[in-house]
Length: 346
Ligand SMILES: Cc1cc2nc3c(=O)[nH]c(=O)nc-3n(C[C@H](O)[C@H](O)[C@H](O)COP(=O)(O)OP(=O)(O)OC[C@H]3O[C@@H](n4cnc5c(N)ncnc54)[C@H](O)[C@@H]3O)c2cc1C
Image (cartoon, protein in one colour):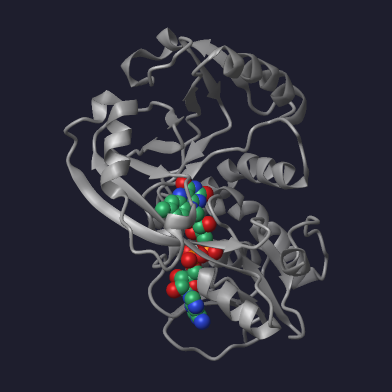
């Protein structure tokens, strides 16, 4: 007997199945390739907040999810006995000029009210952070204590292990669909949904990341020039870009790994000469609204959609899982406005 079948073994599907299993449901995850073989299999793993001003429901949802993350990943690690690589180590961002410095200081105040004492956004001199700190035009950096990191593939395997420990099933390949069905099938799921409803709900955008052998120790992650530089516990540093412009469209074949490496060593000279362990490319599921898409699949009774993680899928996964478990198991609708299927198709 299965209460919930979750299609897709990426971070959305596994997080939803894990939370449903923790609430006592009998779950089955069906993955047509391998676990974390989609966007969730990259090396980056930056859990980084939006800027703390111009607060809205999307930022509030991401904030709550980032706060929830620590307990979420610790408990999954305890149940599975596997590491997710989670650590809340904060993030440094160089401040280029006087205008940015003033804005950063205003945002410190916004963080005090919107982050409600759970984390800080401080403006500090670069000399506080030794040679790992990126060069900064003003001599100051933003140091936020909300940012965290994890190792994406390990985190997915940790969730899968916890699901099995809780009595759930993981099936690779084709499987019979039973109970309520959650479609967490990444960019292909957005294409399927668009085809089914006859309107574009979203698509994929390609992105690259690089993993380097470099043991940076317990230093904060960096965000500079649109680049995430994330030190991991296993003696690696991952580099990825937030760019997802026209040249990164799903159908482009351009590889930007070499550019990433050049830019990373400019920002962080201590990475120069670090051996490249992996160059990785994946497809981010991007909803038309650019927000997650959560809720019932239009016109398919008992079927739900959980998609559109785009650039922050790992950051919002704990919150997405709670909201989806409420909806699927209890019929309780806590989906934020702007995150519904109809919000993405207009
Ligand atoms: C280069 C890059 C860097 C990123 N960096 C970060 C970051 O630092 N922090 C962050 O939070 N996010 C980051 N992201 C975004 C994040 O990876 C995604 O938002 C997230 O992985 C999406 O998870 P998902 O489970 O929705 O999709 P996916 O991980 O793509 O999983 C979907 C799964 O469904 C399976 N599937 C498809 N169709 C079917 C079917 N019919 N039946 C069964 N299974 C099916 C696929 O094989 C796949 O395994 C990055 C993305 C990229 C590409």
